[in-house]
Length: 237
Image 1: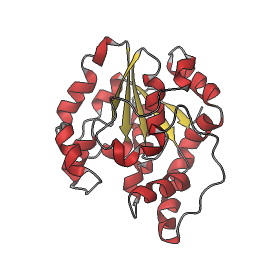
Image 2: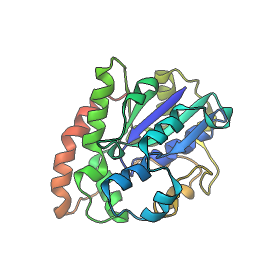
Image 3: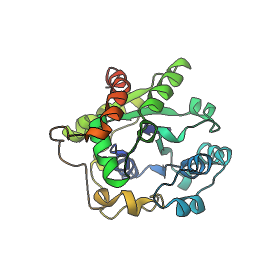
């Protein structure tokens, strides 16, 4: 099984990659279109030069990689994807052949977390619009995409992952609930900038507290993102 997990940044996506890697029957890949996205947009992300050097900048080559033989000969392949990477010029037809899952998180939490790592995010940085578009695309093909909320995962990891595995036809294993601290060999080269907290973890963080206060200058981003999030919330497990 090939699982394409679609989220924006700061959305429990790395912890979810670690959870699937911990299964023992699953290869993982970390944001394979990141370099292609930076090459096409010219955006000045942290560690840009390192990312461009570490990954293929050709989206067609990336598609061949993620649709080819599963690394390590595993029966399952978990692909951590960022929705904002799927810009014009990045193929989408390959998504027909994978199980598409959409990982959502409240925009206030995403914006507060993202702004702490990269200043002044705009809507296209945090992926809510693109996530809704990809969901509609997949559903238009006749697939039944799965939506899962990071809030629910942190509130009860076992129940949430059992529900997810059942929805995609994969047997749940309790090995998904813990992993070694210190990161994973398949972490992207950008991990030192973004993954500090999850590197220190050995499992999912405790349930989330109250929503953070979003700064006044980022309120327009929050207000624009909310309708996309609410649409996806209506589809969640």
